[in-house]
Length: 361
Image (cartoon, rainbow, N blue to C red; front, top):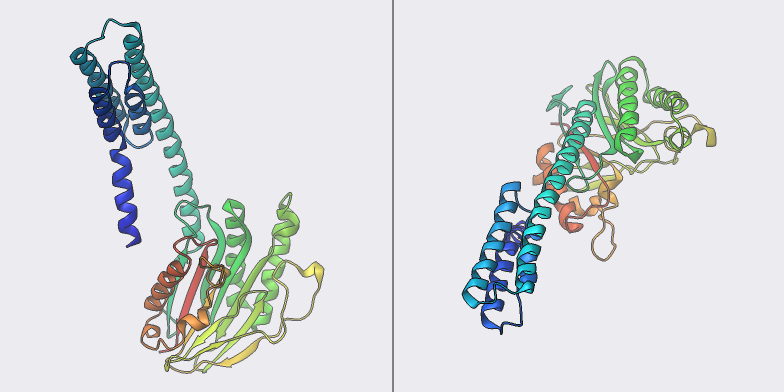
């Protein structure tokens, strides 16, 4: 329904130049000679400039000029100075509208190019994981807050290792290419540590050190505010448990086959990664049962902090409770979840969100 309304609005806006010329014609024809519809004809090419192609804008200007000239010939008064001024005004504005169209198109092309480069960089550091890793079904999804917005610092990665399948979901402070740089550092460090470190706690400490090194290379705010909230999970092979280390991140959810949902809150809250100078204590992994048919959902705060028109946050645990059928396939689950969050927020999410679902068949 929302998309249909947007489509109708776009069609109406594209008709505005023609409607403006039509309104000017009716006004000119139905009013005394002292009244003029020239403003309608002048507005038509200006409205067309950001909406039409260069050729379309030029044609709109020529049509506006030709219709006004025809009306003046038909209704008389062509030799009058004010009539000549009206015609020259429409012609000059039409030329300016074509120039505006050229500038707008070049600006849009540069913006599109920059956006494509940024999105390519993000795809490079956030590749889609395989559908099956270590015997688990996997799905990941990245949802931008709005089309054309700056890319954010949300991240996810899955790595099989001798110690089990390891997962990280995180959110780097900030947006843009600076945040993507931190994302690349975190994911690179995670993939290496997931293979080499024997415990999930040691993986978290490797990420802490990697962020500390990266901050020393940055300048300005990023040199002391380059922190990352993260949730790390470990699924040992052949064991029905999940181990978690949470560093200031929203709690993962366990979705069971009967539709019940459990929030895996950390017993001891910890600071985000990259904030060791404010306090240091050993990471402690916590365990939970991860039985067959259940799904582990990790997400960023773009999900849990999505607001509706009354300012109420979206509650993923409440929203997913009782949906046993939707939880069978991770990809379907994430699709349903993303659609529901957009409905909750009216399509205007305030922050990007990264989602990853791991199901034990």
